[in-house]
Length: 376
Ligand code: G3I
Image (tube, rainbow, N blue to C red; front, top):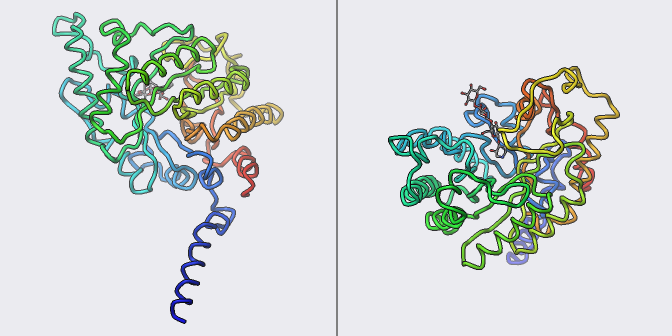
């Protein structure tokens, strides 16, 4: 008799936990709950969130997201501003927040031409260092950072933005001194420091055909050499007219075919006019302020907002369709007020690229996405 009671109790508790989401009151369901079983939903955290100063943001992050990445504070110029002097004050807080909230933590980024400290590439006379010295510096940086967070940071953007839109190698200092082999070396060093961590290549404009082909070739080549590369991060810095959903989808399919996981990283959708012919996340591509390029500083007309929302939903439909390949979708920030897009590619504009407005209120896109996943 007791055994039957015990079995019944176990059966019902299993049933309750498997239906946990549907038991939650509607108002408590976050994006992460609604997309459970499809992919992780992430956000990038800024310094006031990481230090806990922005408590409203913190509560929203806990409710809606199960993965986090630091927008700036794990870049090499912040972590190792002076050779041999590592500053982990903020990154320790970031990782602890993720651990406390059982989140999938992403380290961004180990090797990136931008925001690398100047000393990294030069000797005491200001001349480029030798390949051997640069290898040593890369190894020390990568292994000090990755081993500090071994078993805590689950995935690393190991190499960021090494390929140009035309498919050629970016002529960064890493490339100039070490050639394309710097990419293989970075993955090897990271793997040595934490063999269980996921390791990613992350880049923007990944829907551009020549770039897509070059990334596929690079990933296949690394894999053929036995290098561990777990995933390909497609930065999603979208504009209203670029890229097309179709080209973006082709890249998801092509990247998935390499056997790597696909991640939509750095997702935001700018509503503002673009001064260039296509998007770029290269922070050296900027333009001067002009009033006509800042049309929505007092708000966005309703029809434009709907156009913006529909474009986001079109992308999410593609993400859901390919959720077998996509392991994570990460937004590049929480609220419009904190988005880098207000200052890029033109400083001082008012943009609306994210899911929460300047007063921390969820935009209708959040409800639409919850509806789309049948849980609202
Ligand atoms: O740290 C200083 C701070 O001391 C100073 O008060 C402030 C004044 O403007 O500037 C601060 O630094 C800025 C930093 O963001 C933190 O806000 C830098 O000037 C600014 O260039 C930096 O921009 C970041 C950019 O990367 C360059 O690192 C953006 O916030 C960040 O969103 C952006 O993110 C990159 C990804 O890492 C890689 N992919 C492209 C993406 C967009 O460029």
